[in-house]
Length: 170
Picture 1 (cartoon, rainbow, N blue to C red):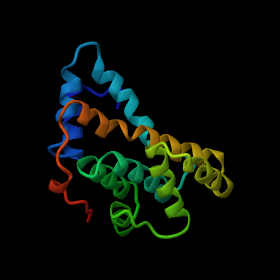
Picture 2: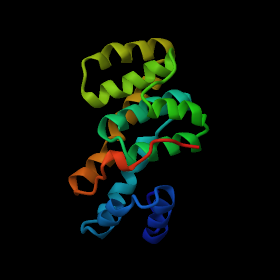
Picture 3: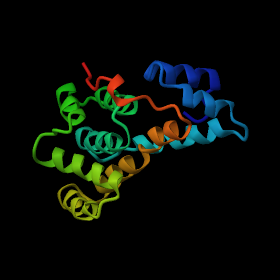
Picture 4: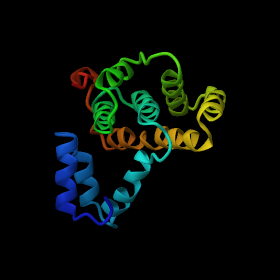
């Protein structure tokens, strides 16, 4: 999104997450080119080259759920669906009930990273053994960086109560 005109970018953000763009508007109004810096950060949260979409989004959704059980988690879930992940699988992740096997491994890995759990080392080793170092890196990067969005909203006092946001994608 770097280089995209401010008005176009803000419109796209509002379309992706209706009603959830207030923090981005605050960033856009901040001095010191804050919005341009933020736009350079955003692609890092979605960097995926080798990781299968379903594994990637299991880790990303799990990390988001550790930080937020509301709008940011729903935005992560909708991103997964846009990336081709089946909505039933996404909804299982939102319910913290991913299917057994590699998908559950990726989900638990993402959550362990977000919780700063020592378990992340062992889970990461298992991901790497099954899928390679690059996939481990991509899942770790997604889980680590996606946490910035709910943290920013919380820091600005813009978080909503989780009970107000139904977590379900169609």
